[in-house]
Length: 305
Image (cartoon, rainbow, N blue to C red; front, top):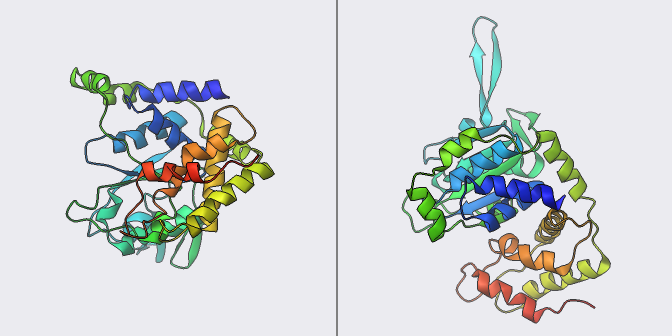
């Protein structure tokens, strides 16, 4: 199975050049049934990542450009009265897809952002008193501009917690940027790309990931880390039980992509900064914890023998 994932990563890398670590994390998030938040500057490749993941996985794709005047109905859909039939007909919004790109999500108001909460948590939406199931698998990739940019609204904690991971793409390395500047653009490669798998294959992988074994030793290590965040003076608020489940599920997905049916502490160490980074705040400054400081947790929490 590891070879199959390497082929997928290589194919996506033809479009998203020089971003293999971020591609692996995005795939980990998708197969773990999570949702992904990408925070970075405009023009880095956030939208391109969403498009290429959807095409490679053979999944339906919709994009929403969030703006300050957008309403929840623009996402979920609305009922329109048909005078001839003398009845209302529901017109589904773009959320009824498999991969939803919520582009610049923090440009919308909190009321509009909250329209995604039920969908991300329960894979369904309730509109006008009726609950409607979403397509499976359902994967939200949201992009966010840094908060120092004007015209943005901070995502509330309840919204942030719905994202399994938050990553940054960063600038391409010199070799990758040279290829971009020479005209080896992503769009032509993306247009010619074939699907790496069918959407049923994605669903099957997601099912198998739930079977990856978590030993008592691994769970003890995970609990020790969670307890450390709750008692350490460096954190304002520790990780919640839901965050613990997120760490476990992401570790399962990473282990499966590595070709194992069991988890080891190294799996947790790889994914923790991307799962816990947007859930923890500094007690002194009230700011997010830098990745380097998050990695210091592993020097203070020993691996159980």
